[in-house]
Length: 292
Image (tube, rainbow, N blue to C red):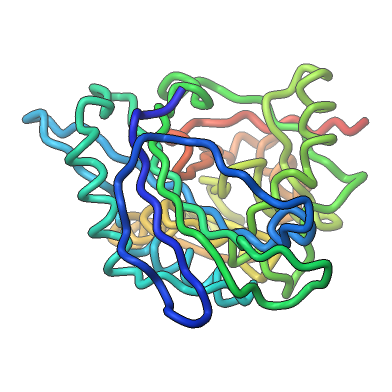
């Protein structure tokens, strides 16, 4: 299910970006030679709109999502849409479709995409591209607030590798994980906890934090370092900012081994495991370490 209208803008190498327009949601006709379909020349983001206590509509750091989409576009040789203008486009579309923003604790997902419209049987920078903004109710892929989620530690496949482009969001990235994500659900898990060797990186759609008492008897919040194997999420940065305001809490971005977490847990030193992402209201997770 999606809102009645979307925003679209078109680009070509001669004239640049055209004027964005709000139009009824419609289908596209693409050539089988389209380089977005054949080579994955597409970038995607996901932010949210919320109702505040007075019934107004708010968005969470849309400027940072817009900047990341611009970086993704540049990484894929797609035309970068101006981040400030994208925020204005989001605001305008929400004014038209405000009735779709639900009451708390639900939210409305705002999904901007940039993709190639060039039809050419070769991998080259596109000559034509499009920007699309869609509005989607988040209840379609979110669990209720603070529902415990069981994670499967996946050691048989790698989602990404250090120093790869995990700091961007190419459109086809998540599709590569679908086989393993489906298998984990069939095995009774909710999501995958992706591993790199002995280290944890992130879950299917979230950054992960471990709240523990360390060996120096300090209260510590640890999250994996974003070295390319985990996406530096916007909500991740918010949690780090809030945590650093607590002077009694040690905050670290570093490699975390799953066996180390299990060792802390056996000694009752793990206080909480928290994952957080724009697609989900923060959820407390229980880590499952079985592999298939």
